[in-house]
Image 1 (cartoon, one colour):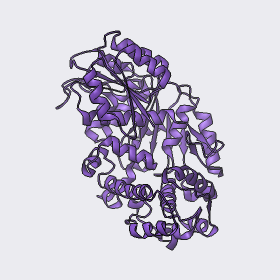
Image 2 (tube, rainbow, N blue to C red; image 1 turned 60 degrees about the vertical axis):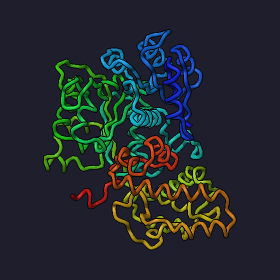
Image 3 (cartoon, rainbow, N blue to C red; image 1 turned 90 degrees about the horizontal axis):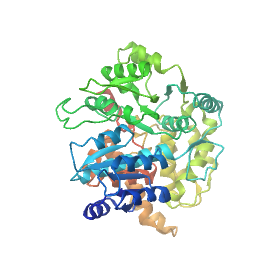
Image 4 (cartoon, rainbow, N blue to C red; image 1 turned 45 degrees about the vertical axis):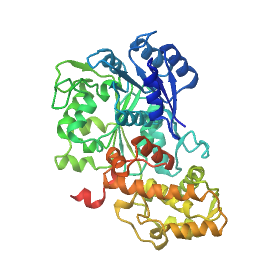
Length: 484
């Protein structure tokens, strides 16, 4: 279970934050002094920190520096009661994840903490190759022995230690984020900050501010200075996912940063030096985007000097048995299953499918099959109907291989007939998956809107996504949405 450390010398604030944020999916630790907080970081190794900048025994900046000396990749969220203070801004320049103003908005703080925990997992959980133990839950495996995947491993080994920009190309669901994490973790910046941003998930009007920051008054609603991701990732790595969705204006600023390693915040004149390694990824054909005027050719030249191309699953079907074995071992604990084998007939049906949604679609299919499994062997009747019949679902269903509602009554009767236990949790996991995927597809991956529509907090939403092993990316948009 992830943990959050809250450091504040006001007992009522500690109490409110602990009660608001503590859940079955998050442990909240509290400290009333900077020294106690630093000791907790040293001994308990929390996954994120909420740090008040005004503490009785030490300044906020000194406490921040001590914490980052212990763990340079630990996300630290600074809290201040003084809107005009420069201490929080200075902490952001030194690498703080975010700063918030008191009195705290609990909806906002849950959202920021959730994002910090997601970032912690990206930077901290190893993304390793097939040689690791597939049953080790502490790692995310990049699975595959096909020649095309061997080329990917070799490319990671050659490029990771070089302090250069890398472009990762591949269809949705092929594992671009895993490769980005492997590049970071095997790089010379592996102990420095790692930040990630999905360019398709942030409105165009806000993306430039998110990346480069802004000065107070730069635009309507800019009531305070903001430090952007490039400044926060100083001496570290920034992963720009779905870079093909970036606007022309933002592309121009990214190009200048890559060429000159400097930029200005929106509305500002101060030139800021940026020592950041950029890893970019896209599922788009950038050559076609250049021809269509949607992507700058000079930026493409700057990005694709070092390119890693991930093969779609249909081009490495010899890896299918390995992937199925890995996914079963990975998903068994969360679903309370003990499946250890796949019937040859079921594996044959999986091999006949074209997998337009790639490994992500396969993951959803195996999860569906495990929910339906009534023994320790996956049989053809466990598989979604489109796999059994050979029918292909539309792109909108890539994330959920069977987009129709599960026949819950039938499933429960089967479980009762076979004497299964823990029925409520198993069926709840299956229904949660359908609800989350359907609503997130409706909101195009916007988790704030999705949590409001479902009537749950974003922290709960992110916890459910993590528990089910789901990720949020652009495939939540249907074909109809993409075509306009």
